[in-house]
Every structure is written in structure tokens, then in C-alpha cells.
Length: 96
Image 1 (tube, rainbow, N blue to C red):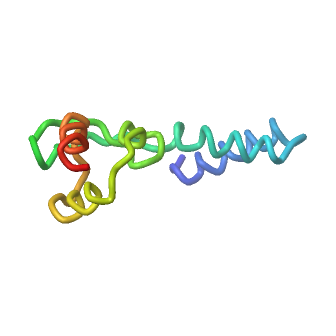
Image 2: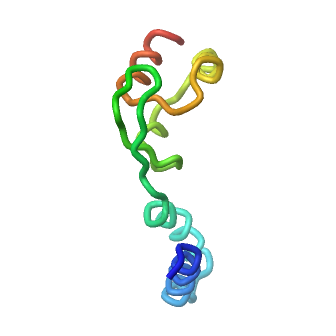
């Protein structure tokens, strides 16, 4: 079965279970859909070459960090991909 079919099947099952309340379905879908279908990728940090896990979603470890505008610009200008958590922590302290 393809991933697209799995996603449709997931939504149909959840909707049937929660069909008595569309609002509840919507909340459940937003909370858990990404946890089920977002694939974790192993990446290599462009700053220190450490390997780390990335989910490219709101559930990724990096989502818990708040970045200053200066840091966002620095990251955009200097890196083309995600950094590991240790490097991110160092830069958050260094660039405010």
C-alpha cells in the first residue's frame, strides 16, 4: 500500500471513530497526524559534522527553540540545511 493510501485510510478511520464531533476530529488530526506520518531523517550538521535526527515539522526537537531575527539571518546566510542541537544551542547563546 502506498504512503498516500495509508494517509487516506488513517483519516477515514479516525473520522469514523470521531464522526460524532467534527471539531474533535480536526483537533486530533492536527495533533497526531504529523507524529504518525512525518519521517525522521538522519542528517549531518554542516557546522560540526555530527549526525542527528530531523523531522522537518513542528514535532522536531528544534521547534522548542525560539530564534532571534539576527540568528535567523545568520543561519540563512551561512548554512543550507539544519544544524544539530549542540550547534544550535551554541549559536543561540552567541548570536542574540
